[in-house]
Image (cartoon, rainbow, N blue to C red; front, side):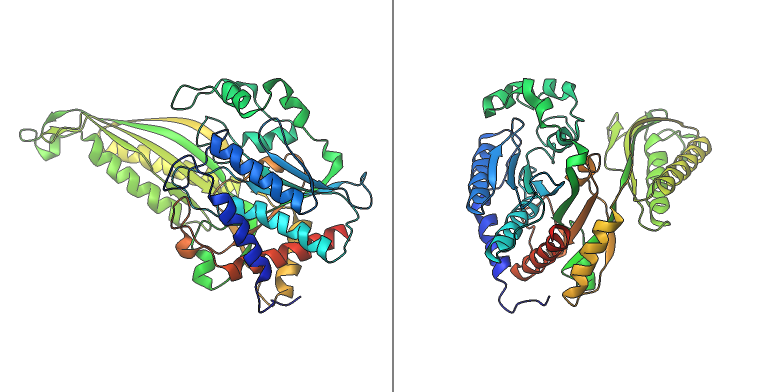
Length: 412
Protein backbone atom coordinates (compact mmCIF):
# COMPACT_ATOMS: atom_id res chain seq x y z
CA UNK A 1 0.00 0.00 0.00
CA UNK A 2 1.36 3.45 -0.90
CA UNK A 3 0.12 6.95 -0.19
CA UNK A 4 -2.01 8.29 -3.03
CA UNK A 5 -0.92 11.71 -4.29
CA UNK A 6 -4.55 12.81 -4.01
CA UNK A 7 -5.68 12.48 -0.36
CA UNK A 8 -9.24 11.63 -1.33
CA UNK A 9 -9.94 9.71 1.88
CA UNK A 10 -8.59 12.57 3.97
CA UNK A 11 -10.83 15.04 2.15
CA UNK A 12 -13.83 12.80 2.73
CA UNK A 13 -13.04 12.64 6.44
CA UNK A 14 -12.58 16.41 6.64
CA UNK A 15 -15.94 16.99 4.96
CA UNK A 16 -17.64 14.84 7.60
CA UNK A 17 -15.75 16.63 10.38
CA UNK A 18 -16.88 19.99 9.02
CA UNK A 19 -20.48 18.79 8.94
CA UNK A 20 -20.35 17.62 12.56
CA UNK A 21 -18.60 20.80 13.75
CA UNK A 22 -21.74 22.79 12.88
CA UNK A 23 -23.53 21.30 15.86
CA UNK A 24 -22.68 23.25 19.01
CA UNK A 25 -24.42 24.30 22.21
CA UNK A 26 -22.81 27.74 21.98
CA UNK A 27 -22.67 30.21 19.09
CA UNK A 28 -19.18 31.11 17.93
CA UNK A 29 -17.39 28.14 19.48
CA UNK A 30 -17.65 24.36 19.56
CA UNK A 31 -19.21 23.02 22.75
CA UNK A 32 -21.16 19.77 22.47
CA UNK A 33 -21.95 18.31 25.85
CA UNK A 34 -23.42 14.89 26.50
CA UNK A 35 -27.21 14.70 26.01
CA UNK A 36 -27.49 18.35 24.94
CA UNK A 37 -29.44 19.57 21.92
CA UNK A 38 -26.18 19.82 19.98
CA UNK A 39 -25.31 16.24 20.91
CA UNK A 40 -28.69 15.11 19.61
CA UNK A 41 -28.15 17.01 16.36
CA UNK A 42 -24.64 15.58 15.94
CA UNK A 43 -25.94 12.09 16.69
CA UNK A 44 -28.59 12.48 13.97
CA UNK A 45 -25.92 13.77 11.56
CA UNK A 46 -23.70 10.79 12.39
CA UNK A 47 -26.63 8.44 11.96
CA UNK A 48 -27.16 9.79 8.47
CA UNK A 49 -23.48 9.45 7.58
CA UNK A 50 -23.49 5.84 8.75
CA UNK A 51 -26.60 5.04 6.77
CA UNK A 52 -25.10 6.59 3.63
CA UNK A 53 -22.10 4.30 4.11
CA UNK A 54 -24.38 1.26 4.10
CA UNK A 55 -24.43 0.64 7.85
CA UNK A 56 -27.63 -0.46 9.56
CA UNK A 57 -27.70 2.22 12.23
CA UNK A 58 -29.51 3.49 15.31
CA UNK A 59 -29.06 5.76 18.31
CA UNK A 60 -29.03 3.62 21.44
CA UNK A 61 -30.70 4.40 24.74
CA UNK A 62 -27.58 6.15 26.11
CA UNK A 63 -27.15 8.36 23.07
CA UNK A 64 -24.37 6.45 21.30
CA UNK A 65 -24.73 6.04 17.53
CA UNK A 66 -24.22 2.46 16.40
CA UNK A 67 -23.84 1.32 12.80
CA UNK A 68 -23.42 -2.30 11.73
CA UNK A 69 -22.38 -4.02 8.52
CA UNK A 70 -23.26 -7.71 8.83
CA UNK A 71 -20.64 -9.22 6.52
CA UNK A 72 -20.80 -12.70 5.02
CA UNK A 73 -21.16 -14.37 8.42
CA UNK A 74 -23.34 -12.33 10.79
CA UNK A 75 -22.73 -14.86 13.56
CA UNK A 76 -18.94 -14.39 13.57
CA UNK A 77 -17.37 -12.22 16.29
CA UNK A 78 -17.57 -8.59 15.15
CA UNK A 79 -14.90 -5.92 14.80
CA UNK A 80 -15.66 -2.62 16.52
CA UNK A 81 -14.35 0.76 15.36
CA UNK A 82 -15.17 3.93 17.23
CA UNK A 83 -14.56 6.99 19.34
CA UNK A 84 -16.75 9.83 20.66
CA UNK A 85 -18.64 12.90 19.41
CA UNK A 86 -19.05 14.83 22.67
CA UNK A 87 -16.61 17.66 23.39
CA UNK A 88 -15.22 19.78 26.17
CA UNK A 89 -16.28 23.42 26.43
CA UNK A 90 -14.77 25.54 23.63
CA UNK A 91 -13.27 22.51 21.94
CA UNK A 92 -11.48 21.62 18.74
CA UNK A 93 -13.21 19.62 16.04
CA UNK A 94 -10.97 16.54 15.84
CA UNK A 95 -10.79 15.09 19.36
CA UNK A 96 -12.87 11.92 19.26
CA UNK A 97 -14.84 12.80 16.16
CA UNK A 98 -11.91 11.94 13.88
CA UNK A 99 -12.05 8.31 15.00
CA UNK A 100 -15.78 8.11 14.30
CA UNK A 101 -15.61 9.51 10.78
CA UNK A 102 -12.59 7.39 9.85
CA UNK A 103 -14.55 4.31 10.89
CA UNK A 104 -17.27 5.38 8.46
CA UNK A 105 -14.69 6.13 5.76
CA UNK A 106 -13.21 2.65 6.22
CA UNK A 107 -16.58 0.97 5.69
CA UNK A 108 -17.25 3.13 2.65
CA UNK A 109 -13.89 2.17 1.17
CA UNK A 110 -14.48 -1.54 1.69
CA UNK A 111 -17.89 -1.39 0.05
CA UNK A 112 -16.60 0.69 -2.89
CA UNK A 113 -13.87 -1.93 -3.41
CA UNK A 114 -16.51 -4.68 -3.45
CA UNK A 115 -15.07 -6.31 -0.33
CA UNK A 116 -17.55 -8.23 1.78
CA UNK A 117 -16.10 -8.67 5.27
CA UNK A 118 -16.10 -12.16 6.73
CA UNK A 119 -17.52 -10.84 10.01
CA UNK A 120 -19.70 -7.94 11.09
CA UNK A 121 -18.16 -4.49 11.48
CA UNK A 122 -19.66 -2.03 13.94
CA UNK A 123 -18.86 1.67 14.00
CA UNK A 124 -19.75 3.44 17.26
CA UNK A 125 -19.93 7.14 18.13
CA UNK A 126 -19.95 7.31 21.91
CA UNK A 127 -21.60 10.26 23.63
CA UNK A 128 -19.97 10.56 27.05
CA UNK A 129 -16.18 10.32 26.80
CA UNK A 130 -15.21 13.80 27.96
CA UNK A 131 -17.42 13.60 31.07
CA UNK A 132 -17.64 17.39 30.83
CA UNK A 133 -21.29 17.71 31.88
CA UNK A 134 -21.96 15.00 34.47
CA UNK A 135 -19.69 13.33 37.09
CA UNK A 136 -19.28 10.09 35.14
CA UNK A 137 -16.39 8.10 33.68
CA UNK A 138 -16.67 6.89 30.07
CA UNK A 139 -20.25 5.95 30.85
CA UNK A 140 -21.46 5.30 27.30
CA UNK A 141 -18.56 2.99 26.45
CA UNK A 142 -18.51 1.24 29.83
CA UNK A 143 -22.16 0.39 29.23
CA UNK A 144 -21.13 -1.92 26.37
CA UNK A 145 -19.03 -4.06 28.70
CA UNK A 146 -21.82 -4.18 31.28
CA UNK A 147 -20.03 -1.81 33.65
CA UNK A 148 -22.47 1.09 33.72
CA UNK A 149 -22.83 2.45 37.27
CA UNK A 150 -26.42 3.23 38.22
CA UNK A 151 -25.35 6.06 40.53
CA UNK A 152 -24.24 8.04 37.47
CA UNK A 153 -27.93 8.59 36.68
CA UNK A 154 -28.30 10.72 39.82
CA UNK A 155 -25.35 12.98 38.99
CA UNK A 156 -26.22 16.61 38.23
CA UNK A 157 -24.79 19.17 35.84
CA UNK A 158 -24.03 22.79 36.72
CA UNK A 159 -27.69 23.69 36.20
CA UNK A 160 -28.92 21.01 38.60
CA UNK A 161 -30.24 18.73 35.86
CA UNK A 162 -29.79 15.04 36.63
CA UNK A 163 -28.33 12.70 34.04
CA UNK A 164 -31.49 10.63 34.39
CA UNK A 165 -33.71 13.56 33.37
CA UNK A 166 -31.33 14.65 30.60
CA UNK A 167 -31.28 11.12 29.20
CA UNK A 168 -35.08 10.98 29.17
CA UNK A 169 -35.23 14.38 27.47
CA UNK A 170 -32.72 13.19 24.87
CA UNK A 171 -34.99 10.29 24.01
CA UNK A 172 -33.19 7.58 25.98
CA UNK A 173 -34.55 5.26 28.61
CA UNK A 174 -32.69 4.77 31.91
CA UNK A 175 -34.55 1.51 32.50
CA UNK A 176 -33.06 -0.03 29.34
CA UNK A 177 -29.38 0.74 29.88
CA UNK A 178 -28.65 -2.89 30.76
CA UNK A 179 -29.71 -3.93 27.24
CA UNK A 180 -26.66 -2.16 25.79
CA UNK A 181 -24.22 -4.62 27.39
CA UNK A 182 -22.53 -6.88 24.86
CA UNK A 183 -21.36 -10.49 25.06
CA UNK A 184 -17.53 -10.54 24.90
CA UNK A 185 -17.69 -13.75 22.87
CA UNK A 186 -19.37 -11.79 20.07
CA UNK A 187 -16.49 -9.31 19.56
CA UNK A 188 -12.95 -9.86 18.30
CA UNK A 189 -11.53 -6.40 18.90
CA UNK A 190 -11.90 -2.63 19.03
CA UNK A 191 -9.91 -0.11 16.98
CA UNK A 192 -9.80 3.60 17.77
CA UNK A 193 -8.11 6.38 15.81
CA UNK A 194 -7.50 9.57 17.78
CA UNK A 195 -5.45 12.72 17.55
CA UNK A 196 -2.34 12.43 19.68
CA UNK A 197 -3.16 15.45 21.89
CA UNK A 198 0.57 15.80 22.41
CA UNK A 199 3.67 17.03 20.53
CA UNK A 200 5.75 13.89 19.99
CA UNK A 201 4.64 12.90 16.48
CA UNK A 202 4.99 16.45 15.20
CA UNK A 203 8.45 16.73 16.76
CA UNK A 204 9.52 13.57 14.92
CA UNK A 205 7.85 14.47 11.63
CA UNK A 206 5.48 11.50 11.67
CA UNK A 207 1.81 11.59 10.62
CA UNK A 208 0.73 8.61 12.73
CA UNK A 209 1.90 6.56 15.69
CA UNK A 210 0.90 3.39 17.52
CA UNK A 211 -0.38 3.56 21.07
CA UNK A 212 1.54 1.15 23.31
CA UNK A 213 -0.65 1.66 26.38
CA UNK A 214 -2.99 4.19 27.95
CA UNK A 215 -1.52 5.60 31.13
CA UNK A 216 -2.72 4.57 34.54
CA UNK A 217 -3.58 7.49 36.81
CA UNK A 218 -3.08 8.16 40.52
CA UNK A 219 -4.73 11.21 42.04
CA UNK A 220 -4.70 12.63 45.54
CA UNK A 221 -5.68 15.70 47.49
CA UNK A 222 -2.87 17.09 49.63
CA UNK A 223 -3.12 19.66 52.42
CA UNK A 224 -0.13 21.51 53.86
CA UNK A 225 -0.89 23.04 57.28
CA UNK A 226 1.38 25.69 58.72
CA UNK A 227 0.72 28.73 60.90
CA UNK A 228 -0.54 32.16 59.92
CA UNK A 229 1.35 35.19 61.14
CA UNK A 230 2.06 38.83 60.37
CA UNK A 231 4.17 39.12 57.24
CA UNK A 232 6.13 41.98 58.74
CA UNK A 233 6.80 40.78 62.26
CA UNK A 234 7.57 37.05 62.21
CA UNK A 235 11.28 36.40 61.50
CA UNK A 236 12.02 34.20 58.50
CA UNK A 237 13.71 31.56 60.64
CA UNK A 238 10.66 31.21 62.89
CA UNK A 239 7.98 30.80 60.25
CA UNK A 240 5.84 27.77 59.45
CA UNK A 241 4.92 29.01 55.99
CA UNK A 242 2.56 26.53 54.31
CA UNK A 243 2.97 28.09 50.87
CA UNK A 244 6.78 28.03 50.98
CA UNK A 245 6.61 24.35 51.92
CA UNK A 246 4.02 23.66 49.22
CA UNK A 247 6.20 25.38 46.63
CA UNK A 248 9.07 23.09 47.50
CA UNK A 249 6.74 20.09 47.28
CA UNK A 250 5.53 21.18 43.84
CA UNK A 251 9.13 21.26 42.71
CA UNK A 252 9.60 17.74 44.07
CA UNK A 253 6.54 16.54 42.14
CA UNK A 254 7.90 17.99 38.90
CA UNK A 255 11.39 16.62 39.47
CA UNK A 256 10.22 13.12 40.40
CA UNK A 257 7.79 12.96 37.48
CA UNK A 258 10.62 13.71 35.06
CA UNK A 259 13.24 11.14 36.07
CA UNK A 260 11.45 8.01 34.80
CA UNK A 261 10.63 7.16 31.21
CA UNK A 262 7.04 7.91 30.11
CA UNK A 263 5.96 9.28 33.50
CA UNK A 264 4.31 12.62 34.23
CA UNK A 265 3.30 14.23 37.51
CA UNK A 266 1.34 17.44 37.93
CA UNK A 267 0.03 19.75 40.63
CA UNK A 268 -2.95 21.29 38.89
CA UNK A 269 -4.61 23.06 41.81
CA UNK A 270 -3.14 25.09 44.68
CA UNK A 271 -5.47 27.03 46.98
CA UNK A 272 -3.85 29.29 49.56
CA UNK A 273 -5.42 30.36 52.85
CA UNK A 274 -5.99 32.96 54.13
CA UNK A 275 -4.77 34.53 50.90
CA UNK A 276 -3.89 38.01 52.18
CA UNK A 277 -0.85 39.99 51.05
CA UNK A 278 0.36 40.68 54.57
CA UNK A 279 -0.32 37.28 56.15
CA UNK A 280 1.99 34.25 56.18
CA UNK A 281 0.02 31.44 54.50
CA UNK A 282 -1.46 28.99 57.01
CA UNK A 283 -2.75 26.34 54.61
CA UNK A 284 -2.37 25.21 51.02
CA UNK A 285 -4.60 22.59 49.42
CA UNK A 286 -2.99 20.85 46.44
CA UNK A 287 -3.87 18.17 43.94
CA UNK A 288 -1.54 15.47 42.65
CA UNK A 289 -2.00 13.79 39.27
CA UNK A 290 0.59 11.10 38.41
CA UNK A 291 0.53 8.97 35.25
CA UNK A 292 2.46 6.13 33.64
CA UNK A 293 1.77 3.32 31.17
CA UNK A 294 3.31 0.93 33.75
CA UNK A 295 1.37 0.61 37.02
CA UNK A 296 4.36 -0.57 39.06
CA UNK A 297 6.39 2.41 37.86
CA UNK A 298 3.51 4.76 38.64
CA UNK A 299 3.10 3.45 42.17
CA UNK A 300 6.84 3.73 42.78
CA UNK A 301 6.79 7.31 41.51
CA UNK A 302 3.90 8.26 43.79
CA UNK A 303 5.65 6.66 46.77
CA UNK A 304 8.79 8.68 46.02
CA UNK A 305 6.80 11.90 45.67
CA UNK A 306 5.00 11.42 48.97
CA UNK A 307 8.21 10.47 50.80
CA UNK A 308 9.94 13.61 49.57
CA UNK A 309 6.93 15.77 50.46
CA UNK A 310 6.85 14.30 53.98
CA UNK A 311 10.55 15.12 54.36
CA UNK A 312 9.92 18.70 53.25
CA UNK A 313 7.03 19.02 55.71
CA UNK A 314 9.19 17.78 58.58
CA UNK A 315 12.04 20.11 57.65
CA UNK A 316 9.77 23.14 57.51
CA UNK A 317 7.70 22.36 60.59
CA UNK A 318 4.39 21.97 58.75
CA UNK A 319 1.88 19.13 58.60
CA UNK A 320 1.08 17.22 55.42
CA UNK A 321 -2.10 15.20 54.92
CA UNK A 322 -2.75 13.11 51.80
CA UNK A 323 -6.10 11.77 50.60
CA UNK A 324 -5.82 9.45 47.56
CA UNK A 325 -9.02 9.38 45.51
CA UNK A 326 -8.13 7.66 42.25
CA UNK A 327 -6.01 4.68 41.25
CA UNK A 328 -6.93 3.85 37.68
CA UNK A 329 -4.83 1.05 36.15
CA UNK A 330 -3.01 1.37 32.84
CA UNK A 331 -4.63 -0.13 29.75
CA UNK A 332 -2.18 -2.07 27.56
CA UNK A 333 -2.99 -2.45 23.89
CA UNK A 334 -3.54 -5.90 22.40
CA UNK A 335 -0.31 -7.15 20.83
CA UNK A 336 -1.99 -8.89 17.91
CA UNK A 337 -4.06 -5.86 16.93
CA UNK A 338 -1.14 -3.49 17.38
CA UNK A 339 0.92 -5.86 15.23
CA UNK A 340 -1.60 -5.53 12.40
CA UNK A 341 -1.66 -1.74 12.72
CA UNK A 342 2.14 -1.75 12.68
CA UNK A 343 2.20 -3.79 9.46
CA UNK A 344 -0.18 -1.33 7.85
CA UNK A 345 1.89 1.67 8.94
CA UNK A 346 5.08 0.12 7.56
CA UNK A 347 3.31 -0.62 4.28
CA UNK A 348 2.89 3.14 3.82
CA UNK A 349 6.69 3.48 4.00
CA UNK A 350 6.56 5.05 7.44
CA UNK A 351 8.33 3.89 10.61
CA UNK A 352 6.12 2.35 13.27
CA UNK A 353 6.51 4.72 16.22
CA UNK A 354 5.09 3.44 19.50
CA UNK A 355 4.10 5.90 22.22
CA UNK A 356 2.01 5.88 25.36
CA UNK A 357 -1.23 7.82 25.67
CA UNK A 358 -1.24 10.24 28.58
CA UNK A 359 -4.98 10.83 28.22
CA UNK A 360 -7.81 8.39 28.74
CA UNK A 361 -9.98 7.20 25.86
CA UNK A 362 -13.03 5.01 25.21
CA UNK A 363 -10.56 2.20 24.58
CA UNK A 364 -10.06 2.03 28.37
CA UNK A 365 -13.68 1.02 28.85
CA UNK A 366 -13.76 -1.16 25.76
CA UNK A 367 -10.80 -3.20 27.03
CA UNK A 368 -13.22 -4.74 29.52
CA UNK A 369 -15.17 -6.13 26.54
CA UNK A 370 -12.55 -7.17 23.99
CA UNK A 371 -8.94 -6.63 22.82
CA UNK A 372 -8.23 -2.98 21.92
CA UNK A 373 -5.71 -1.02 19.87
CA UNK A 374 -5.29 2.65 19.02
CA UNK A 375 -3.69 4.70 16.26
CA UNK A 376 -2.61 8.28 16.97
CA UNK A 377 -2.65 11.06 14.38
CA UNK A 378 -0.31 14.05 14.52
CA UNK A 379 -1.91 17.30 15.66
CA UNK A 380 -0.40 20.77 15.23
CA UNK A 381 1.61 21.86 18.23
CA UNK A 382 0.21 18.97 20.25
CA UNK A 383 -2.74 21.26 21.01
CA UNK A 384 -6.06 19.72 22.00
CA UNK A 385 -9.19 20.69 23.97
CA UNK A 386 -8.77 24.04 22.25
CA UNK A 387 -10.20 25.70 19.11
CA UNK A 388 -6.62 25.75 17.75
CA UNK A 389 -6.68 21.93 17.54
CA UNK A 390 -5.60 21.08 13.98
CA UNK A 391 -4.64 18.20 11.69
CA UNK A 392 -3.87 18.12 7.97
CA UNK A 393 -5.93 16.47 5.28
CA UNK A 394 -2.83 14.50 4.30
CA UNK A 395 -2.42 13.07 7.81
CA UNK A 396 -6.11 12.19 7.94
CA UNK A 397 -5.62 10.37 4.64
CA UNK A 398 -2.66 8.38 5.95
CA UNK A 399 -4.64 7.41 9.05
CA UNK A 400 -7.60 6.36 6.91
CA UNK A 401 -5.43 4.14 4.73
CA UNK A 402 -3.73 2.54 7.73
CA UNK A 403 -7.11 1.84 9.31
CA UNK A 404 -8.58 0.43 6.09
CA UNK A 405 -5.65 -1.93 5.53
CA UNK A 406 -5.79 -3.09 9.13
CA UNK A 407 -9.51 -3.76 8.88
CA UNK A 408 -8.94 -5.69 5.65
CA UNK A 409 -6.41 -7.89 7.43
CA UNK A 410 -8.84 -8.61 10.24
CA UNK A 411 -11.99 -9.26 8.22
CA UNK A 412 -10.48 -10.99 5.19
